[in-house]
Image 1 (tube, rainbow, N blue to C red):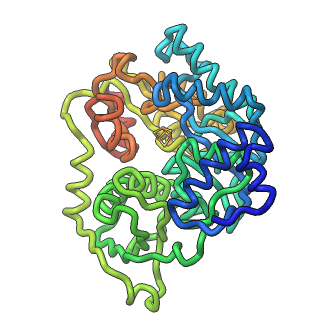
Image 2: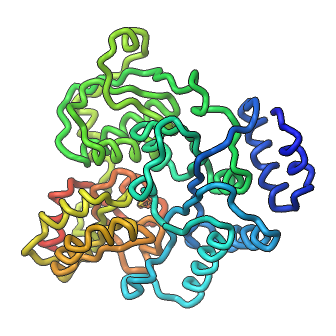
Length: 392
Ligand code: F3S
């Protein structure tokens, strides 16, 4: 990969160890994937923030970078952590876990990474169309490419951090226009009613297509929430970082490989996301973190009702959205639900909270929780989740 003189100086360590290691990560990645050069980025979004998922070795690396004076060169944000410090009564409250989690957040902050602790940074600041980003967190990446029309590869935590420190990313993958073409036309031959069915579609298509880029035919005016669930699910069971929601251009679609999705495919994918018939201990809504509209919809459904004492209701969103929806948050909390920020059911210590059965309207959570959290799952629509929360 070509480096200019300034980049070479950094590569050789003339700007210090932290920038040298960051540059070396980017060059290694660029060489591996055939990048020609580094390109400037508008922002970085870093994952690897929850102590539950990264552990002590990663903290040592972050300590070393911070000590060596590492600072982000571009606007940078961080994904959810393992604890919401405003709801400690809801969290696993062990002093060591708390202390370690605080340390991670402080280390990111000291490097100029804004600890907004959300996987939906685009609800706080929407990047412009066509800008290059270095974002980690698969649901965030696929949303950025497909809905916001910004351009980012699916970064890992270390490569997003390295890009933040250098302010650049290697030019490969979906940063290149020729790699952003759809290669499979997915013909959806059944009507989708809600976000959970969009999630089931995403799981089905992701399993089949792996990293190919689909465009969809037959989605009837999907809204951004439904597309968020479709993308997050597809990026969980597969590796795509981009999809095209609607196709009406026969010139493109004629050339593409075709995949038909029938109602049975959707039903099977939906059912595969539930592992038990037992009653849930927790209902979790907000993976990816809720938008203003989603918080509103939950409040409207639960207004005047009461969450059953046998079950917890968690609604996860960013602090920004929580603030903006204060009146709806009050309705949800008056009903006995909790509107949690900074974390989610997947990246916190769920099992230790006494949760054995998790019910959710998120296909991504239902896909990962049995392995990542060792819990049984029930996959259902938002309406069914609210009903179950009130019924217990
Ligand atoms: Fe976000 Fe947690 Fe889901 S980080 S995408 S809410 S698993």
